[in-house]
Image (cartoon, rainbow, N blue to C red; front, side):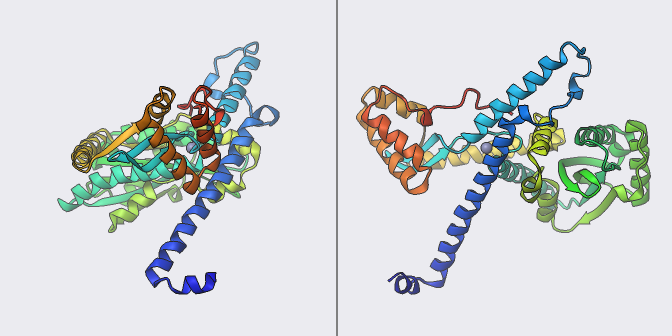
Length: 376
Ligand SMILES: [Zn+2]
């Protein structure tokens, strides 16, 4: 029966079904990975990973247990937030009073693979909008990749601190300012046989900077900023013909999914502790400003279109509140959200919503936000 039904699909339809299945499958895998990372953070208290936090260097020996306890508590909170990622509806898109889409909450944690995907897409979109505009005006771009020397014995924190310090020294240096007008930067961490490999990609718009001069400059920066001896292999420069490809490379995932899968629980906790709250993707001020302007103009256009098409965005918390006040419109919307979640998932949330509709006084736990949804 299914075979016959399948054969009636056109090639396009078949492709659509396949890609949809792929998408759902990929999302399931990311969800599983996210859960594993969250569980690693939850058990952070039992791992060796919590060592002295270098950013709390000034704390005395008496306070150290306190600092460790604080990190452990933060790890647990982050874990709770991560486990709730993409499970609670946040914004509902309606058109003439019927539900068109349900946007789920994001935990925005540094290590969350699902949020990383959305964050990378947003950062790329912003960078592309600016770079494309300049490319049309005839600007040329290069991709510079830099790294600091490391060995197996270096901790992640040492390597990451060294690289970020050198990057700051580089962008602040006179030489850099002379050759580079604007840039966007992304930091990436992988694990190699030779320890943690932290490196930064810069996509730059500027004058021709002779490769050898740039390499010498980087070696000097590394020597002055962190006392390490970099080699000429620590820098790679390429002219960019395809800006889109360059942006994909320069601005992307701080950690590769394949790497995250390989890390042990201890290493995941360490990764979280070292990178939480750090800006791993950055743009120079001028590009950041221009990207915001373009985004605002797009938003204004989209808003006008939405008004014309009768589209409205409603907060889920508002829907719940109105259901509690027995508002007929809200009850209808909540029913449609329920149907949407039943087909698209997560079904546990749909069931919780059904429970709330039958007894609007008690809000089920599955519909409540975590204590601090903005935790990093
Ligand atoms: Zn998330």
